[in-house]
Structure formats: C-alpha cells, structure tokens
Amino acid sequence: MELRQIKYFCAVVEARSFTRAAQECLVSQSAISQQVKALETELGFELLLRHGRSFDVTPAGELFARKARPLIDQLEDLRYEAEGVANGWATTLSVGYLSRYDGWEVQAAVTAFAVRHPHIPVHATAGSHDTLYRLILDHEVDVLFSDRRRALSDAFVNRHLFDGWRYVEVSEASPVAWPSELTVAELAHVPCILIAAPDQEEVERDYYRDVLGFRSDFLFARSREEGRMMVAGNRGFMPVETRAQTGRTGSAIRRIPLVGQDGQLKSEYYCYWPKARTNKLIEEFAEILSNLFEDSPNI
Image (cartoon, rainbow, N blue to C red):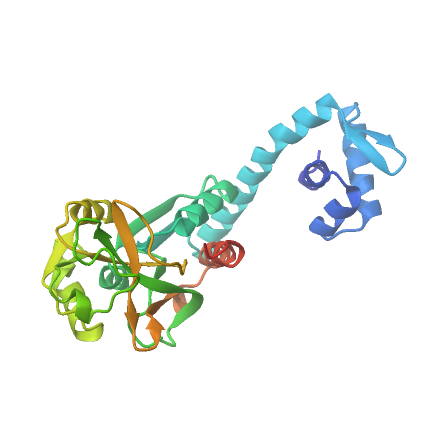
C-alpha cells in the first residue's frame, strides 16, 4: 500500500465524491479513481460499492478510513518534525494571548490547531499586553494575540484581526449601573479594576491613566474571573473589550458602552510575530485565528 493511495481514499470518503476529493488533492478524477482501485486490488476486498457515478462505502471501507486518518496525520506530523530537525524549524508552538480579552476565538484556534497536529505540543500563556511583548522579545512565545498600544513595527508580521468595542462592567448595586453609556470622566469617582500580574500593575495603571485618561483609583485582579467577582461585590468597575457592539447588557453585572466625543471607544486587535522567526506552524495558527474572526458573527 502506498501512502498516497490511502490519503486519496480517505479524501474520497470524507468528501463523499471523487470529483471533490480530486479537487482537494489537486489531481485528476481519473487519477484518484485509479489509485483507490489499486488500493482495493492490493487489499483484496472492496472499499467502495460503485453505482455508476455514485458509490457507497462498504463496512470495511468505513473501518479502513476511520483507522487510516489518524495514521496519516501522525505520518504528516512525523515528516514535518523530522524535516524541522533537519532544517532547524520549530516543532512546537507557543501562543501568548491577552488575559483580559473576553472571547472564545483563541481557545478555538488552539483546539483547531491541536486537531490538525495532535503530536505537535501547543503551549498557551495568558498575560497583559506588556508581559506578552516581553515574552515574545525573549523568545518565550512564538505568536501573540493582543491589542495594539505601540506603533506597528516593521520587524513584526502585524495581522489585523478586528476592532474591539470598549465597555465597562459594573455591579447592579453601583451608582453608575443605570446609564445607557458612560464616559471616562463619569467614572472618575469609582475604582477601576484592572487585570495584571504584580510586576505589571504599574505599567497597566500608567496606560489607563496616561493614555486612556482614567482618573479613578486602581484595584488589581489576577484574572478576569477574579475581576468579575470584585465587580459583583461592587468594589469598582472593570474595563472590557469585545467584538460585539450592543447596548447596556446584563443583570447582576451590567456591561455598559464606554464612549468619547466620537462615540463608543475601540481598540485594535492583532496577531503578531517577529518576521525573522516566521515558520509554518506560526503561519498556520495565524490563518486559523484570522479565519475564526472572519467567519464568526459580531454578536
């Protein structure tokens, strides 16, 4: 049996069509049909029951395809890993992502990558913007998902993903829980809860105070979940950013748009990595992440 024959057969079963399988494998329909027939001849039993231009998969064919697909994936990963060792390529992937982002896309991208490459370890690290920036400069992560706070660098691949709308989350017990929108000035007398590691508290405070103009006292949480518990206890408000642009939402914790002179405030989100360290794994993960943001609705 040839690996090519097995791959073609699995493609036919998954596509349920010789035509679509041939298109996906970038070969002619006659070529893929001949290779599948050759595989059946070598095995000595039918994998497909052909009915003119259609076919049914035999029970043996279903079993063969189900067992063969993981083996093909393992062989592809083995080939890439061996080629990577020979050429000095990466054989693992380390992802850094913004700890305060309130969305599912990064987790979904990691899952999709792991499904495609089950034998390539994927490590994910959450952190603040500056923590992530330091990690990628120190070669501790390969690719970042984060907001933009600096001018874009030509030394990096900067792949724009979306613009995130700014909100604040407040307890329904808070005196600022009821307006349909809020400004930074209207929050000056309410403590601001930020998510940051101890060594990043000053950096985050300076950014929110000096760049975004917050004049509140600052409290710190180590995770989004801890921050929300502090909000629920009416200890302050927590800034958040999401892809969804909606009005005031929530009950126990209310999410209220944060606005400025030109309307609701926004932040740019990117996938970043150093150009000099570009490799196949990074590019594939970035493509998966980008597709998730393009395909998922802003709701």
